[in-house]
Length: 412
Ligand code: NIG
Ligand code: FE
Image 1 (tube, rainbow, N blue to C red):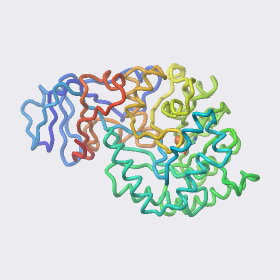
Image 2: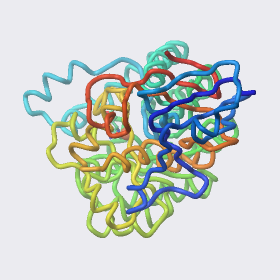
Image 3: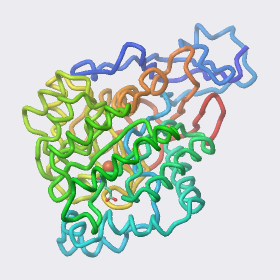
Image 4: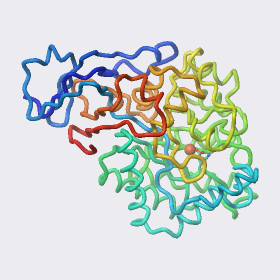
């Protein structure tokens, strides 16, 4: 007797995570069960199969899903969830041709959000992030990563990380926390960026002690931190017991991709300017390539990350919103799926793997999230879509009908 039994599912995307991330050509294969059925009990998935097999099974609630598809809850592996304020006033500057890095160099951009985050109370940050999380959930996301990085001082970074910890308890979405203290250089450290990085490393013992983050991240970019600084910083974080990620080759091609692969980063993110060598390294190592086409789109660029070359090289590619107030103000992972089809030239099968199993591996949750397997948490999405090609195709709307998180219906 199930709690919930979904039957007559046109296509059940029975994605598996226990065999590892999907790499290279394997990303183009998607296990689809036609006329599928899925059972949930006590918060877990207890049956994955066909409607024929489920014919004599009973449940407290049986839902007819004909004309629809079912997938694992989506995983959004890169977000700047907790921040004060917003940056709509930068739109006019962008329209006049002032670039993202110029706005930052003038003390705006990330630094303007830092000012707004410093003055916000923890309660304000919490309420605001709850609002954004509700929206992410409504788009089908059940697991998400959340970065700090709008404090750049000990007090405010801790305020952000403690907010994430509270959110982990308060919201249905499972959150994975990342310390991004090395997100920009505050005015006071402009002439000594190494001293600033050391100042951020000094926080690691407290973060460990209070269990405030699993990952450490850095923005490796022109005018922010160099590849060598990033390597030294991330190695120190690994030494202190953290797994690491990097914002690499987002705007200028500096070589952060190769560096991330060489030190064993869990993921390297952005990678728009990844070199051919960096692309090859992604194919040879376990560093997941987290691509953020929404950011490239929103920065008004024409050149997108070389996703096809990465897949050709054997890399595991994941997709994310990069939700943040500056370069990608959206919680809509479905729009990112559209962009992945249109601008990264990913196939529908690759896209679904990139927002489920591979996204889970990118945040160390490959054995828990992003798959529909018996015994896993029942994180399930029912889609108003006749087939899985439909979601990356029909853009600008929300296709979600219902989300279950740990077997509980949380959005309809
Ligand atoms: O991933 N590039 C650095 N960090 C974010 C943007 C943050 C912001 O603009 O507030 C990104 O693009
Ligand atoms: Fe980011």
